[in-house]
Image 1 (tube, rainbow, N blue to C red):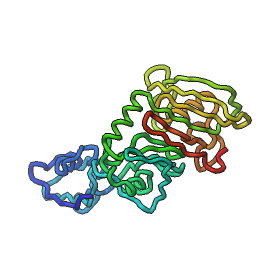
Image 2: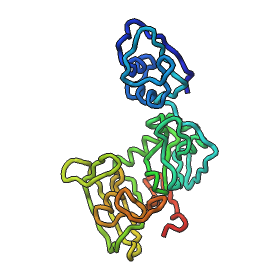
Image 3: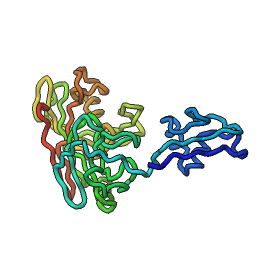
Length: 283
């Protein structure tokens, strides 16, 4: 975090937009300056400034204490961190369904990454850095299971190369509505549209999944192996097939639960593997 600072508006900036001037004064992008303004970290003559405000002679800009985009998230040692596999390069945890993978703002302190940084501070700045320091891949907040972090840039690069080269094997277990039987291999084009991911006939990203029934009934339990890593891939694919995940209201489940019943059970590539058992009461 950086200490607050104040600026008197010079004659040359009279009439300029506040977000443009803040970006230049702080040495950040205009988009990040707008985030600071939206969070009311920038005051214009004593009041929260609007991004499009035109500066006037005599105005004073006060920037309250703020974090830069490259700053790592706040460490939170009070959070539980259930480690299921660890070596000098990577750490795999069993993420609870109630937790996000990483924060979206520096003020957030309850994500898996906040807990990880508290235990492994050497990961600050690793990989993409900033609020994604050490993050190798992601799980949706409602999805539980294996989540991997890297402890060094070299480890992060090796893991990401394994993902790019499709050497990573990921196995998920889901409980779905409907009587799913047998095994299916399916490839769909998926496109993000706001909160949803939809199947499209052209464009989008190819999502390749293998789905196999483990238990069949009015609600079935299925195993899903992901051959690709597209946002909401399993959730959108199962809903498209007519078998939405139980508790997944976003994709059509009528069952009100605090989470959707999707669990990342295992992940493995040449150099690393980890497994997280199904949560109690999942099946």
